[in-house]
Amino acid sequence: MKTDKGVVYWLLTGCVLVFVMVVVGGITRLTGSGLSMTDWHLVTDTFPPLTEAAWQTAFDEYKKFPEYQRINSHFTLSDYKFIYFWEWFHRFIARILGLVFILPFLYFLWKKRLNPETLTKCFILLGMGAMQGFLGWFMVKSGLVDFNQPDVSHFRLSLHLTFAFLTFAYTLWVALDLLYAGRHEGVAPLKNLARLTWILVVIQIIWGGFVAGLDAGHVHNHWPLMSDGQFFHDSIVLEKPNWLLRFTEGKSGVQFIHRILAYIVVALILTLYFSGKKYSLSVTQKRGMNALILIVFVQVGLGIFTLLYSVPLWLGVTHQAVAFFLLAAITFTLHRVSK
Image: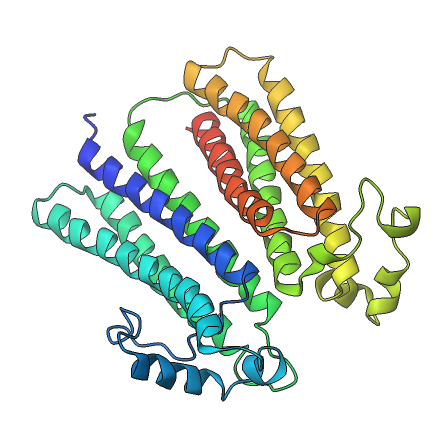
């Protein structure tokens, strides 16, 4: 079967733009910029304010909301312009991504270059893109309504983040389906292990979103033990009244789960890597395995240093970016041992 490389390149371009959008989203989060734009307009806020009067109007609108009143009341217009830029830039990339998907999609549809199976997958991607836009506003809205909670819900932040990762993974999977069409390289004994590893990586991303949303990286900045030389810190039990809340809403508990999941992910990837040694893997399968083992150790190292240094901007963003490469590597590996 001949591969339409134009369609593959289009999908991979989408993957790159999702990656860029999430990296900018990480910067937006770490600079406290996510609530700087207090409304959503599909067209009229495509560009930032162009006059000082327009900037002042936007700033005055921001002053009506909890984040300014509780946290940023000292802000000048210059401070506001800084945080506005990152949220605007994040939304601007989302708009570019939408155009990069829709316009070539219509062209490929018109030229009949999408087979029925790929067309169905593209409609799914279109729906996922629309859902991601909704989840972005759903997240922002949670930080604008409660004076006592001048921040977005960490559950909604994690949902928005994780769905972006899933959109990226599915786009990559569709591209791989086309790129390797007709090449059957499956290794059945590795399929379930690779699938389990993929699921655990996604769960780890979910808890990474919880850590980011709760600023849980700013507590227990020690490794391998938590504060006071404890593996399971006393504060985990003290923060919340029951176990579910301790591990989903408590800073200490969320960080503890993120740590434990990291060890589990490393163990699963090591198991997958050495299990693969028992089989005659293809070149692409070996490349996937090698990338996976390299990236997971880079990611663990970044996670440790991000924690030890209390989440400096560049380390926090790099840690989130490498999570993308880790998901890409396990998605690629799962694809190649499954097909």
